[in-house]
Length: 237
Image (cartoon, rainbow, N blue to C red; front, side, top):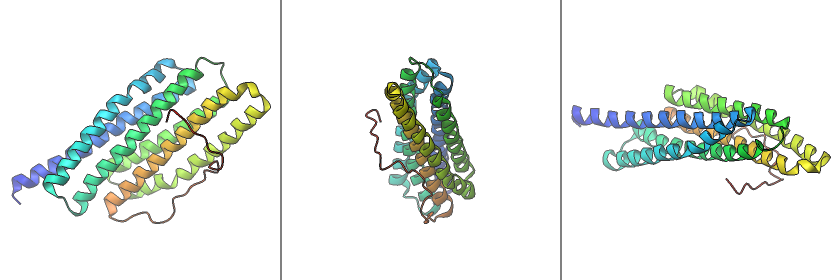
């Protein structure tokens, strides 16, 4: 393989990494806007979160096209293959996080038309923790840091525990005052979307770890979501 071909291949891999980093920054900002829309009852931020989703989707499509081109024309091996496949997988996870942020933004628009509810601030705290998890895993990807990715992977249980606690609080709230059922249902869906965003961040952590080390995190992922026996379906998801 000539020096020119090697340089061109390296540039293509760097372009993929740049695209993932750009998409990650946009998804992170979109998710942050959705969470702050809840915390501050800010309709403008909710609208921004909703409107940002299209751009995130476009970048995901570009990354997919670039990665497939690398696979078809370069037939990468070893770490280069893992890097290419990681870009595909991470872009897909970020696209789903963008969808969840959009859903949260839509719910925020509804909540902002209703009287304030104290539990919304608990929801915002959970959202900020999930956002911190996303930021940490994107930093781990940029730094190619397997240990940092594993640390994020282990944080998933913390998000689940926050979700379980909030889930119980909201159910209690609805039982004590049936007039709040409609409002609390929106909060439940938002909480589930935040918890799912944490799952996607954890998936990214697994991908980063494999990309860097060539091995998988084989132990069971820490999970503490105890609400699965009470299914909640969000038609907007």
